[in-house]
Image (cartoon, rainbow, N blue to C red; front, top):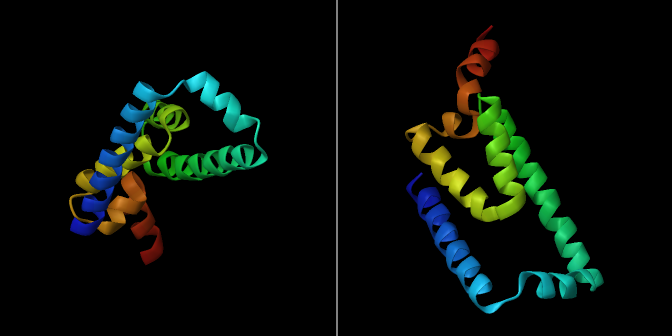
Length: 117
C-alpha cells in the first residue's frame, strides 16, 4: 500500500501543479475552443470522460452515503483525475492498509459474508 499511496500523492502533486500552471498561463475558453476544433482533441475529451465515468462507477459502488457519492462524482466530472487522485488517497487512508476495504469500501463485510455461505 505504501507504493500506491506514494503514486497517488505524486499524481495529486503533479495534477495540482499542472492545474496551477494552466490557470496562470492559459485561457480556459480560448484553449478549450482550440481543443474542441481538433478531431483528436474531441477524441481526448471522449477518452477522459469515459475514464471519469468508469472511475465514478467505482466511487458510487464503494461509498455508502448518497450525498457523498454525488459530491465525489460531480467533483470528478469537473476536476477530473485531480479528484481521482484525491479519492484514491482518501480510499487508501480510510482502508487502514486493508486491500479489500480499499477496493470494496463499505460493502466489504457483506460481500465476504455472502461468499462464505
